[in-house]
Image 1: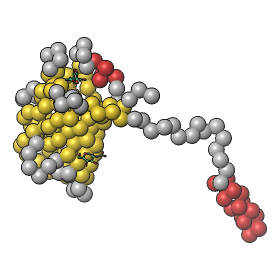
Image 2: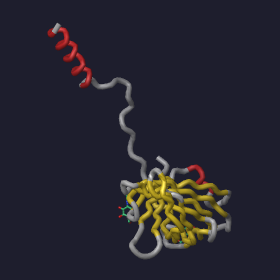
Image 3: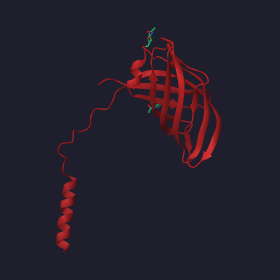
Image 4: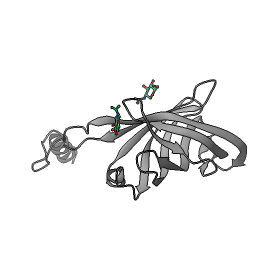
Length: 167
Ligand SMILES: *[C@@H]1O[C@H](CO)[C@@H](O)[C@H](O)[C@H]1NC(C)=O
Ligand SMILES: *[C@@H]1O[C@H](CO)[C@@H](O)[C@H](O)[C@H]1NC(C)=O
């Protein structure tokens, strides 16, 4: 009995070291290219105590998105932005913001939402979703965009957005 068990255990251990045949192996990591940098002015209206922590009730009052070369790409349309993320009890920040921007290039609008995770009042990384009919910026509808939002001690939040480059 003891002998049988030992043999079975050895067989199991051997299995752990077998390479899996047919797995394709890791693909190269996506490459990110700078898309926009800018600011978001967030006005915290209320923090609602809930089962997960504090649910943010905030207004995004204004902000700008700049092109990497420093020219203005878009303005946040005042009155369109909200933040409704979660300041979790353990210090994790689950970011959730949405707002409308107007592009400078063709005066068209875009709906933008950012869902992320990070550290409360420090920084979060998230997925930036864009919906627009802009003839200039329409490509953003179908590309994966990463946002990095940081919260300086003073002044508006800082947003950096990166687009996944075509392989
Ligand atoms: C800056 O970048 C934007 C977006 O790519 C482009 O449309 C614009 O022509 C550039 N302006 C200058 C001065 O390079
Ligand atoms: C996000 O931006 C901040 C401020 O520029 C930077 O310190 C941090 O390294 C960035 N995070 C990532 C994951 O790149």
